[in-house]
Amino acid sequence: MSKNYKIETKCIQSGWHPGKGEPRVLPIYQSTTFKYDTSDQMGKLFDLEDSGYFYTRLQNPTNDTVAEKITELEGGVAGMLTSSGQAANYYAVFNICESGDHIVSASTIYGGTFNLYGTTMKKMGIDCTFVDPDLSYEELEKAFRPNTKCVFAETISNPSLVVLDIEKFARLAHEHDVPLIIDNTFATPINCRPFEWGADIVTHSTTKYMDGHAMCVGGAIIDSGNFDWEAHAEKFPGLTQPDESYHGVVYTKKFGKGAYITKATTQLMRDLGSIQSPQNAFLLNVGLETLHLRVPRHCENALKVAQYLENNDRVKWVNYAGLPSNKYYELAKKYMPNGTCGVISFGLKGGRDEAKAFMDQLKLAAIVTHVADARTCVLHPASHTHRQLSEEELIEAGVQPDLIRFSVGIENAQDIIADLEQALSNI
Ligand SMILES: *Cc1c(COP(=O)(O)O)cnc(C)c1O
Image 1 (cartoon, rainbow, N blue to C red):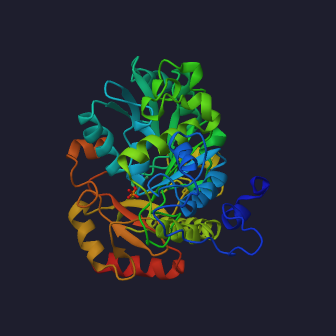
Image 2: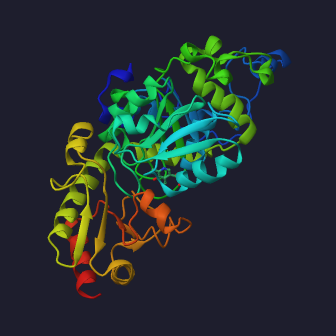
Image 3: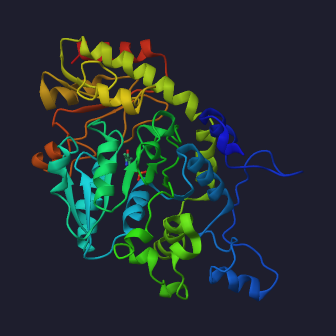
């Protein structure tokens, strides 16, 4: 029923639906295990013959309730929480790839994901071709190989703030018989729901706006249920062939639209174990209850800050898709008519050294390795998050060496601008 509610109502009401005499607020099921009356009941769970909770590494009611809320916010059919955004992006791909396979990813993605796909998963035998997402359809097609299994990109990239042409990428993926996976962390389902534009799977670092208060690291994977695995059965044997580790179950046959998430839960979570703690899921749910209030405020403040920076003499460039001067303004209007996100990037005329001096002068905006929470914060990716990347890789990832990532919080915009003003004049 709650599937028909507007997104604001879903933020509050989706997920937990207590019955008579049950707690109004989602309980934290702080239990590793769950009780059964007979040995056979338990046995059926292990055979995937029956559904039910038995061990929190596989499933936990608090986590599942929060995953259900995010699934409804995105308009998907099934979802799961993970311990982090990194785990979400790892599982989302690894669920349909194995050694010898290949993926295509936008080069403009979060530094951690760039390392995951470019270095760590390469060691596991999965090759990744990074592509500039602004290339033409014809250029992008050249990245595909017969063993390509998916396409990956971010709605708005962190920290380069490239707005993805989701329809172009969806067509690209589908014409090559593979799903499009979108990391929707920065836009959140409040501003963009990638399934409505053809994406098949969405991931999140819930650590950012969804939690919104910088309290817990977490991730989520949501499936639209739209990709037809059986139509390309030979490409996705993990979903369409018997899983011997579950007595020959065929996920697509047994679970239909739930196949992808069921496999990721029963296989990857079982074996790799990157679960979110129920405590964190509870806090995430509290964050989600105000997501629809916070995100518009982040965007409103960010636009004011971007306009201020654009008019400041010490500022060399400002990147924010909400500015009419921005390269991605039109794309952002199409995919995110209500605003993009609260993160801005800019460079100072004095370059990398001035960036550091400026950051040290900020008082309200704190230097932290974080973005997208209620408090304004700042980071210099070339010195911090993207430190492992070479100058060349930095440019490929859309990160200029002088780029300052400024995450605008939900304080009063005048106070944020006053802080910038004093820092810029005191460099
Ligand atoms: C932070 C982030 C991640 C990684 O998430 P963690 O929760 O830190 O593991 C992945 N993608 C994007 C876009 C991010 O901003």
